[in-house]
Length: 179
Image 1 (cartoon, rainbow, N blue to C red):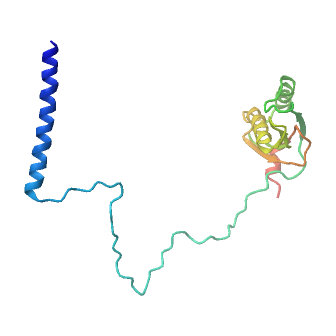
Image 2 (image 1 turned 180 degrees about the horizontal axis):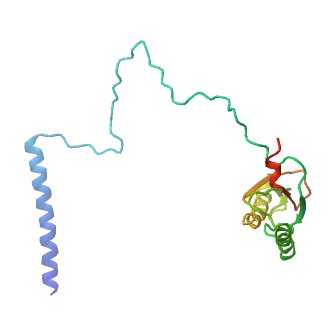
Image 3 (image 1 turned 180 degrees about the vertical axis):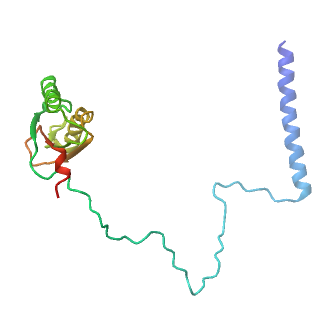
């Protein structure tokens, strides 16, 4: 059994050696230089001769002033202003604040045409450094709670606000029609 295994391995090695020898002989007889293997091949680009007149290509339409301007979403006073407080480095509201926000949203019977602005102040991160990213995550968390009630939500970062404070302002849909 062992002799059969050894003979098959020896035959396989001899076959490979014969194939390599045959390939080398053919290359020598044909006289072709061996191919250099490189990672980057030498390529030379040819450019057509430059003409004196280069056509002007326009890739974008010219910017024109718009006749219609977008309405200012929040004209007037908000119908409700809510101040939410977050714990030191948390980005989610605690149960009391979340319940308070959801009660107010149900009490107002807000429709999708109402608009909301969320102002978030600076917030501490894990290293006790003021972080705008933490404030942004807080505002996004509040926006996720409000979004099922109205889809017009704008978030603003105000570094001058008190640390850990988020202000939510609700606006009437009629504020869109004023001009």
